[in-house]
Length: 588
Image (cartoon, rainbow, N blue to C red; front, side, top):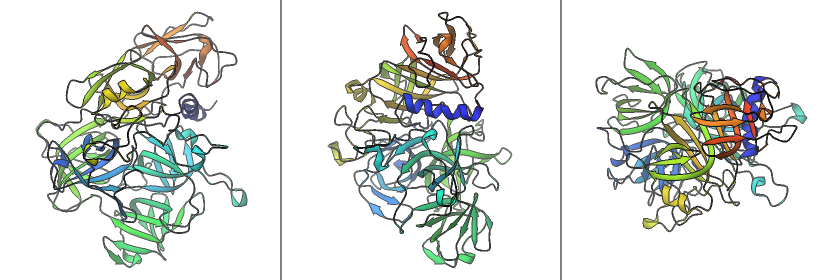
């Protein structure tokens, strides 16, 4: 079997085994700011740009923003609303602090919702964990969430399976009258390599939301946002998409401007169309286009906080680029080291005099590029307060995992809530102060870092899916925690430990033994499915990426002999994918 096809099974197997959105979180340290730093939301008018990690009120960049008086602004059409019920974990937003904000009690005045790409999936490459939408290469990682808002997901008759990962997304196929359009998605996330031409990745996705394809001929049905890489005779090129502006209305900030001279190479531009492009999309006839500043505000001296992945580093100048924004790190304390390309960071600083760059006062590396990631599914056995405020230590499958304010939290244990219809979505609430935050199954509080212990204790199900990364100290830090329906089956995914060395058996009834991040696994040889063939006793090596499903007891995950032939959705199975091609994906 081809390696790419085997990796494609990664999403498919988990979609069949665990009906839960493939979600994640920023990981990182505790929600409190680094020494000497202040929370951006504490200063009136300051902006915090990142992704939503939980609700009750809204958690962004590890901070809990009260939303009692917040206005939701859609950056696509500048529409305003006080209804926050459609917000989801993983959405990228800019939060403006109100005049009521205090250091210990951030308060949101505005929440700007920011989508990067909207259109049909034209290509999907499981081996690279990428999809192509409107000519943009979208990188999917262990931190990418998925939601499915199609009508068929909740249909009473002939329902469809909810999309829970990359394997559920369909790419455009065929041509002419027999062409079938790919899944229609909205992608939220971070611009990547935003200043480079020929970049292989244009967007790092934090949420892929699947919807029914539009049937209207008005509005923002198709959108692309990115850096202009070239000017054409009819418009501009953004990533792999030629945007025709001959009939568009172009705006430079608030002013309408002739499209022929509206934009230049290197500028950040959004283009919209109500009409679908010819698929696979290599061009788009835009009805609107507007210049975007790379920063959410341009006033020099404004305090900003942003998170994203580092796309380039200039060590000599002590600068690096995040989401197309140049960050000056020269004022950081002596001895500070710059992050590496691909690291996910949170930057706190002030807008420089040019209005387009940031002078950093602190930089926190939330997730090191290609760091080890592990997924765990099992019953929680303990939750205790962590070493610092706004942290908890969760124990499952015998492993201690630190949960922080940056961990994305969701409750999908209810039969009425499939992927994309979570109890962690905001909505009317009886919480004090009129804050938004839909009540979870376990009581009148939303599932967030403040309610984590009490909410989980009151939940009818203690069965969790926890996605983690390994920090610099070797500790497991939760990217996401999702409450699932009760189950007796446990799972783990990740890279096989070198110590103790795997002991391989070829005899039925004599187990093969190995470990993942210290979790012991004992597997009947008949249950091991190799990356190319299914063969009892085939070799399994340290460093291989594996997915294990079985039963947990006495510190060991035991995989019994499965029924023959082995099925990928078996309750007892070990799938060995060989050396990992993408260390930032845990298959959960």
